[in-house]
Image 1 (cartoon, rainbow over the protein chains, first blue to last red):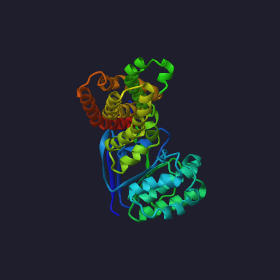
Image 2 (image 1 turned 90 degrees about the horizontal axis):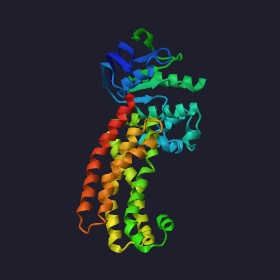
Image 3 (image 1 turned 45 degrees about the vertical axis):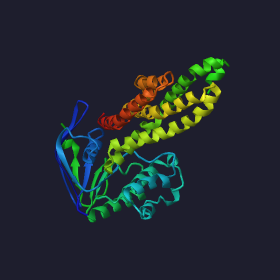
Image 4 (image 1 turned 60 degrees about the vertical axis):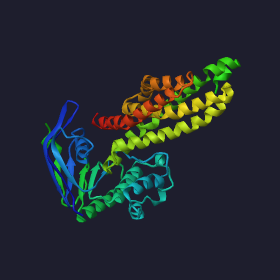
Length: 193
Length: 184
């Protein structure tokens, strides 16, 4: 799996506030980045810039390879059952064998439950299942551990390690400690404008 | 359909105003679903996930335009027939109304979609959307309902032309609105 995600000298402005500047992130196959910093410092904005959802105020982002995003927004139809809601994305992503990811994330017993009845942690696991089934080399994760219990956190850390050893890139914005394989930590406080 | 009950059984009045009333009903039917058309999915991050999969906002909005039209227009056309009977419209007028609605409803859907996308990220956007659609829908309403007053087909053709133009512009306008909402 060959992929890269290289951000060069990017700056981010929200409204009339410059959040950070001069940030470079040379993401190559197998890299894991942990983006840290206080609330409101621009972790989510950085993830969205890397995903191409937000234009950087300055600098460039080069990407090669498909990206998967998990943030606080679920993007699953709240009125459908979990199985149907995930099936929509599986069809788009051309995933023919979704069962493995659902098993690892212990979602199989929940497939008939409407998405709106799921707990915070269960919703997060559903979003992670969509990410796994997308089978994309670049993972952009915004606070992926929110709501996960200790077991699910461990399982997810293992999944990230597997992903990176398979040549994937994982970029995790999180204020919580997370075990990543040889992580490079980017503390946004160092780039604050 | 409530109109004849409210106005009373004056056949002449009903027949004269009936076509216009059906047109107003069409406009209302196009406005009602606007609240849920874009805002919910925008908030849920649906368009972000689609964007990551290389599906452009314009494409998403074009499909949504079709879905919005399918959700109200065929049912409205069906309901036109019993409404025409209740209003005592003759065959010729009923046919003009149905043809006019076929020509005009895509335009109403297009205006609705663009406005729904523009107001999706605003608080109280739905109320604003209703207000914004009405002036934009006036040309369709004038020519669509106007076709009832004239025997020639020009007004119908003009309604169709306005509709086509709006349908062509609307996905781009709505797509731009979704992108702008991300930056906000």
